[in-house]
Every structure is written in C-alpha cells, then in structure tokens.
Length: 153
Image 1 (cartoon, helix red, strand yellow):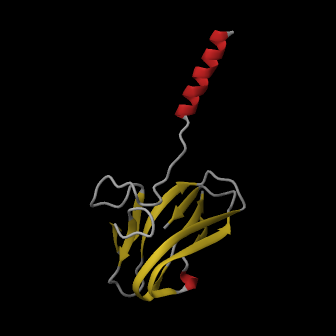
Image 2 (cartoon, one colour):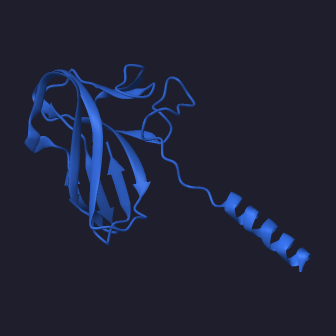
Image 3 (spheres, one colour):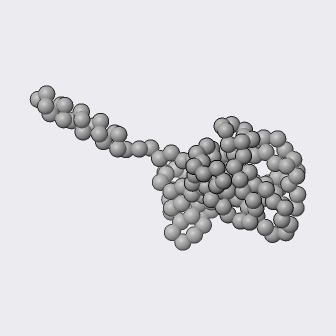
C-alpha cells in the first residue's frame, strides 16, 4: 500500500511540474536583445517602436514615435491564443502621450476567428490627443466563442 501511495505521490508531483501556466510578457519586462522589442512583441505599421525605461509600473514600457503625417499608424502588438471562456473581454493599460496631433493615441484590442477579425477597437472614437501624463484606459467588448487569437497593443 505504501508503494502505491508513494508512486501516486511521485506521479502527482511530476504531472504538476510539467503543467506550466502560460505567462505572457505584457509588461515588456523580458527583453533578450536590447535593440529589439520585448520578447513576444512585434510591429504593426510604420512608426518607430522602441522599449523605454520610463514606465508607469515595472521597469519598461513600449514607446511609439512618429513624425509621419497622413494615414500612417504604428503599434506594438502581442498575440495571445484565445483559450478562454467568458462573455466579455477587457484590456486595461496606462498611456503617457506627448504632442499627439493629426491623429490619436489608444490601446488596441482585436479578436480574430478562423476567417479574420471578429471584433476590434483601437480607441479611435475616444480622440485621445495632446500631452497627458500616465492615465489608465480600457477597452471592453463581447467575447466570441469563435475567437482563435487575441491581439493587444
């Protein structure tokens, strides 16, 4: 009986160690190469994207810089598998903006299914412009059962 309990204990410990909780680098903290974006983050658009040590919390933040005029955009994006259940989804984050003119600043949340985007909000309707110190912003919308991928920016 003791051998069976020990064996069950060893199997339980081993299975718990092999199950890892997925951890995402949403705070920009992990950055293997100093001249690149933080691990897991990638570029959408044509703005200059860097990692900065000026941050609301933590040690790093994403920095988006533009001198473009017209219909250009830039975003630092993170892709997450949509392995979640629920009725709604919310993205919250802090932004500090400086001299935003002829456009807007905003968070971005996009949910894709098998055939492309199901929902997207880039906060364009909020018309966030000018110069503002760190402020908390959020996006919330219905979460589809057809979701396959979540993009946050």
